[in-house]
Image: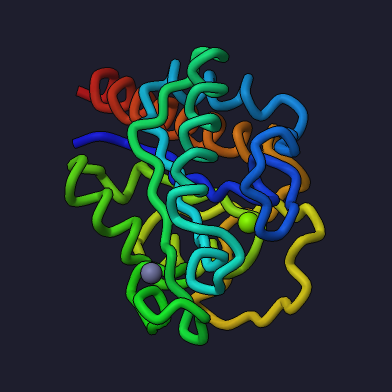
Length: 203
Ligand SMILES: [Mg+2]
Ligand SMILES: [Zn+2]
């Protein structure tokens, strides 16, 4: 079983420009690329999980989004980062384009995209994480039984909270989110070693 980090894109990895699919305007937040390499070195699979309602709303075409996604992946690869998958939800309940206009199970806060990836790539939920900038991301992660971190970049403006919308950790930036994951994993290893030494020396 693999461990993974599921990543929101806009407002989490990059600056939040609503409905932007021009890669020239994409700016990664400071040290995000470095942090993604840290996850890779720690053997986490990386998944990008993004709502792209702009497709349903007729703000851009799905094929324009494919081009953007390709440029995005090329940029990451140039920086030594290899996503295992990059999935998106093109739907919206009140879309302008009929074939994308519907309630779906993939649009966050639903966990459909994450659940599918977990199944496809045999991911262990217990050791995996969701990182996003709004409570909808946290809810999707919680629904998928992942550990959840919210990077509070100021993009959440409703703060509608209930039991499914309480991220385990709220941090100020992506570097802090990375530190949480590394710390938690290190603590688990330390605890295991403690148990081993206690057993050995008590027998
Ligand atoms: Mg976001
Ligand atoms: Zn969808």
